[in-house]
Amino acid sequence: METLHAPEIDAVLNDLSSDRKTKLDTQLTEIDNTISNWLKSSPDTKIVCVTSGGTSVPLEKNTVRSIENFSTGKRGAVSSECFLRKDYKVLYLHRDTCLLPFMRKYSIKKIFDEAANQDELKKDIEEYKKYKDSLLFVPYVTVSDYLYLLLQITTKFSKLEKPENTANYFASAVSDFYVPLKEMSEHKIQSEKSKGGKFVIELDNVPKLLGVLRKVSPQTFAIGFKLETDLNIFKKKITDSFDKYDLHMIVGNILQTREKEVFVNHKVNDSEIFTHHIEKKENIDLEEELIEYINDIFGNYQT
Image: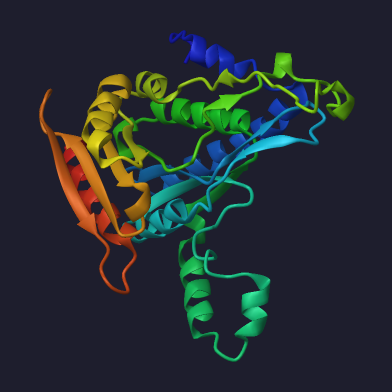
């Protein structure tokens, strides 16, 4: 990262208070140690950073109010389970409130309500125990936390002996707009500041990191997601995303059918985009076939 200069990187690095950065750097130390231990035991291991859940945009430095980009994180959680079963190591970069791998089906209430029938719970606990040493939870809250951690993780990937064994799986629902730290109110915004019963906030565009991350670690396999509501513009949006961000693969889905089908897009040459359609099968998570397909393409990329 020392040789790469981009305004998006500067925006990310300069949008954290010193206290917040110190806390995130503690997480990064744990990530560094975990990756080192993984590679000591298996130098050729594949490592994927799965991002999951929404992001928060605080409106004040001493935050009382925020704008939320909500996501349950289900796709990221299920995908992480599938990657682990394929012998990947997983950095689960997730919103602190979103669903977690192997725990996603449960709440305290559900466990108590179904105490007499816990076969499924026992199965998931056993699977979690089997894979927990291959899984690191990396929680975040704000969009600035998310961007900082993702940038640093990708930078770490670029410095590994075999960065071609790493992948980023961008499944988070990231806010498009935010209030930069330098423009935030220090304390709670008072209702008296409204004019005529209205309060207007100006938001900046969130720094677009996907294309920058491709330059930070060019050999890291990059998988993006594209959600649309209009099938008529779907293909053009996918093509535009390839051109804009230079990703290896884009998983497209339509809002109305996102739980039932996805369209996996990847380039077979400089200009041609191949699309693989995956439909959910009964009693099988859609992500199982999705990760199976990604693993095959990633394997070809590594060779």
